[in-house]
Image (tube, rainbow, N blue to C red):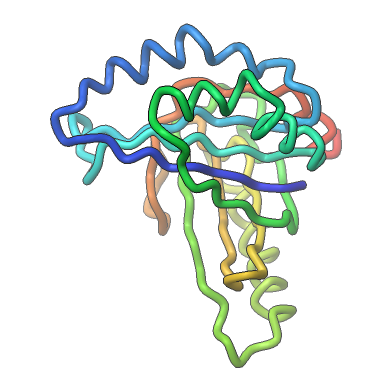
Length: 191
């Protein structure tokens, strides 16, 4: 598994309806994208209390070939580049992903918590601790699915969770899910 996200920050007065219409029109194009486990079309909207207006899709890939095809195979990421310029793409190597108790419900919200691993610590211990947290998170009411991944160039651990409703008190950035493409969820979640 590989995790990937790009964040497009938008002006304070940006009409977020443009993003919502874009996802309504184009979101289903990734519903059968080969190699993709999950794509969550995420937004933060100041009109709904967020600090910024942002379009920030998050991906869980079953194989790197699909991720490569999406980014430079033409037709998909090309549209983002034409509309918004080419954003930096964050990516992490997957550690684990778990279905939640609400995996059969639509995902309406997401949270992303980033943790920098201390420079003087063997990564095995904090990653093992994160797997324990992942197991507990997946058992929470309202969790659709949850994943952890690491960027070893920065020793950054990301914990990403999809929710069927409003998340409770959990750390991290909160997003609204506009659409969820799940072509490879069965393979991703081991079912």
